[in-house]
Length: 96
Image (cartoon, rainbow, N blue to C red; front, side, top):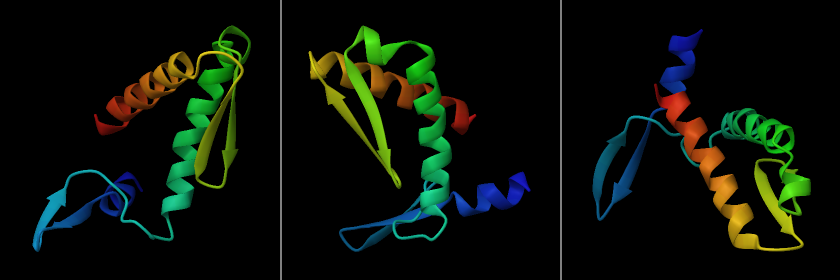
């Protein structure tokens, strides 16, 4: 099953007429993209709440389909920094 999933996580990018293969990624518009996005965002959402960020940062994380929105009452830069940190850490775990 993991082999099948890894096969769906390879994509190519066309830049200036040249095709470059990427090791990890989901092709834009792929029917499987929303599923993978929600799996990824679900983990971030759980960690966001387990660390108490909505209260600590006065920032709530809202998810719609395969998008995430941070609504901040205070510093948006600190909330975005924490969200980016979570996303990068999760990406590192997934890529290994």
